[in-house]
Image (cartoon, rainbow, N blue to C red; front, top):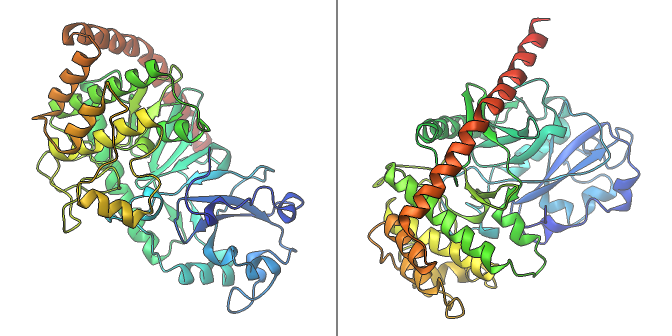
Length: 429
């Protein structure tokens, strides 16, 4: 996964000489205070001068690591119960607050969880440091895939992942609030997936099973954001771009028919399967039309002069879709070269980057930015027309893909039930 976020978050912790030779006795996440986008997973031996509890009373005076200007911008949080391993991992950290604009790294909000309080707690009282609690004892750090605003994702099998709410042992006060909100958002996402299980779409992530512990989902290869970040400047083939635009438009139009608005449409929430097909996911911010949006992430949210977003509906969703189409066609976000304040000012003034080079979908992008379509279904019809395809044929192909997924469903559900059954047997022993 390509490193994102601010310059601090992209420092080469994995390649640092002092890290390479350290044995593992404790593992700490380094959360960047500036962007909170990514963090390194690092290891400290208890005898090392770098070990956090060895720091002085003020928490930052002992050892060369703590005197580092880079470390001053990072926040260590102990992850207990993990098995030692030699490789460090990057993981995505999405802040938990609901709405903000002009946030760093295009994320939801600037995170401000009283970092000094958390840092001092971790350093002075290591035994009481917050630690991540997994829903099943068999899950460890090796199963960890990512962290989002709603919760965590863990690897279960080659075909399945588990999305579960965030839970901490020895939680700090702000983490208690995070746990409550995480649980609420996962429960809301379960409700959406129950609807989608009754009304599936070939380009929406398939839910296998909903349990109190979380949501078992079909495992994907990567996000669209990851794919574009890893392309290293190479242009995605035009045929694939056109397929992604159609599949994404079809998925959001399907949600509209079900009376739903995704509410957080952006490349990080657009997944790709092994065949490079779009699979729209992350429905923890999904709402009904007319409701207030729960999150906002520029440049994928429409803003007025007061930096407010519109109510959820065709206009808000079209704007997000337009920025996603632009990202697919040009390989980067709209106004990616600007800082976030300048980007936000452009969006408020309705100044958008030129799309004249995109002969096929440029007009669709512009019309969506300005909310000119009556519905997402109208956008889907326009995209199909520009690709020379009929809606009837598109429906036939979609139904065939849904039927293929239904055939695979019993085996996937059996894998989930087998995992849960093994956990229950271990608990009963």
